[in-house]
Length: 138
Image (cartoon, rainbow, N blue to C red):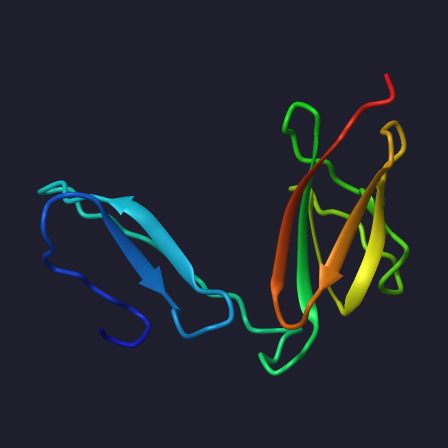
């Protein structure tokens, strides 16, 4: 290890997993690394800063990935009722993230698609990950 650079000179044959930031908010695992003699692997890894979660909270972190019926990500899907101002919408990968406490009935809505209602419950300090598919109105 030299500054932020890590060099691994040797490890056994077979598939390996490199874990980065295992004691951080958003650890990362890079899997299926194999030795290919004479062909080094160069990786650039950047960990996201820990924001919005101090580890001592009793709130749940909610992650949705919203797709169409063919599994393609849907951007600009609204999360209702609104948790924040401005309201939350999915990104270009169909992802949305927020924190909440208690029970909620959430509606995911996008013009041209049938809105979908999802019941979620936060028992306290947990991560809730859901993949949701919206059906086209056509």
